[in-house]
Length: 160
Ligand code: SME
Image 1 (tube, protein in one colour):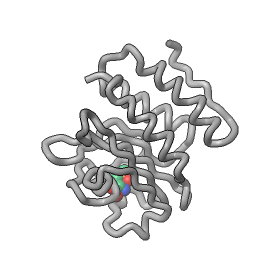
Image 2: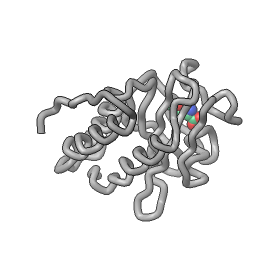
Image 3: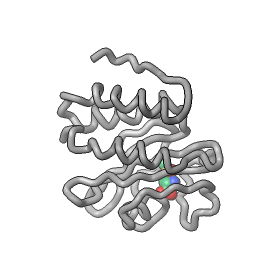
C-alpha cells in the first residue's frame, strides 16, 4: 500500500476509527515484526502527536525497549517496576493521569505528564507493552484504553 498516512481531524473516536484500518493495511502482509512495530508507533505518533509512543518487549524476564518514536528512553525495565513493569505484572492496562502521583514511575523524559500502558498478549502471556506518554496532564481515558487494546490485539498479525 502507499506509505502515506491519511491524518484524520475530529474527535478521538474519529481519529482512531480512521487510523486503525490504515495500520492494518500498513502491517498486513509484512512478515517482519520490527518493521511492523516501527510503523505502528510512527502512525500513532503522526496522528496524535504524543510525546513518546513505543513498545517494550519481554526478553529474558525483562522489558527491553523496542521500536519507538520520541526522546531516548530507558532501555530495560524489570517486572513490577514503573508503570510499564506494573502493567506487565498485573496484566492490565494502566492509565496514569499524573505521572508524579504514580509511586515508582520511571521518568524517561521530564516532559511526560500522563501515560497509558497497554499489555500485549500472545497465547495468554504478556509479550510486551505499548507505552504512550503525553506532555498534557490527564490525556488518556477509557476510550484510549479500548482502541489501543484493540490495536495490540492484532499482535499475532505483526509477524515474527
Ligand atoms: N514511564 C515508564 C517508563 C518508560 S518511558 O515513559 C518511555 C514507566 O514508568 O514504566
